[in-house]
Length: 114
Image (tube, rainbow, N blue to C red):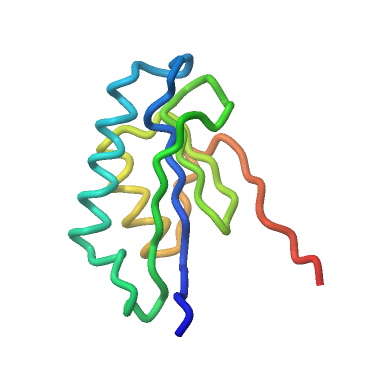
């Protein structure tokens, strides 16, 4: 049985040399991300839409307006991702499929190479 993945969220939460925000801001956002994904059961491998994966990243090399959250496969980069914004992103973007335009830093969607 293969695992179906709906989204993979990469959050720069533990930079060794924080240049985009204070180091503990990323950790607070990471804790909020873990909590909301668990509460909404988005990490359940049996979820019909697919599991939502999360990764704590050292640095996404943006180095401004962090913490930064990158959502694949959509290729949407959010900036200033506070714990409050994390919950809004998960509810609006991941569950409802509506990215929050006011916090999008850039878009780099995966290209179909077929």
